[in-house]
Image 1: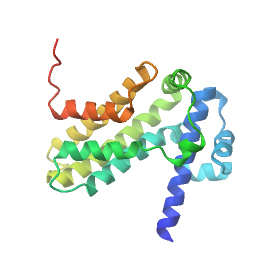
Image 2 (image 1 turned 90 degrees about the horizontal axis):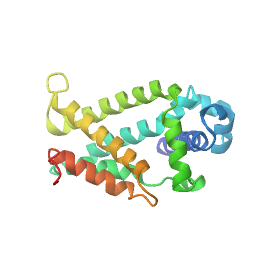
Image 3 (image 1 turned 180 degrees about the vertical axis):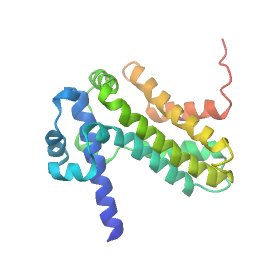
Length: 206
């Protein structure tokens, strides 16, 4: 029962986070209320408040939760798997479309990109995005330290890896938004970004 309860809570949190992003990209940050997000996710405003303290936290939660799941997935990868291979697969596993996206699919690429860009530029989101990134990188660094036998207190390596992995995902997602329609699959972009980082970012041929 505990597993079922936790799964249902995760599904509700994902539905609220996606509804917050979807509605904000569609209508604009100031035109979305907590009540709207709750209704779109099929729950009450009180339930929303049990999960999030604000719209901004709900929007940032999707990136945070995906990153936390990446750290958890990394801990489950085979111990003999090369680090960046394991990191790549752990990250890719988190980009499977969940039921919340199937229930509320994004519109055509051009409209979606315009809405997401406007959302990401919203000043009210900046603090939550920074907080989410810091929490995500700390958890991923801990997972890297466990896997590599390094010490978070004395070694820079796990935090450098976590920061590089986080940046790779962000850049891949930004490249996806900047791409022509139809864009390259996000899975391909993430794989390419991780491959380049793992190779030491060699200069591309002129």
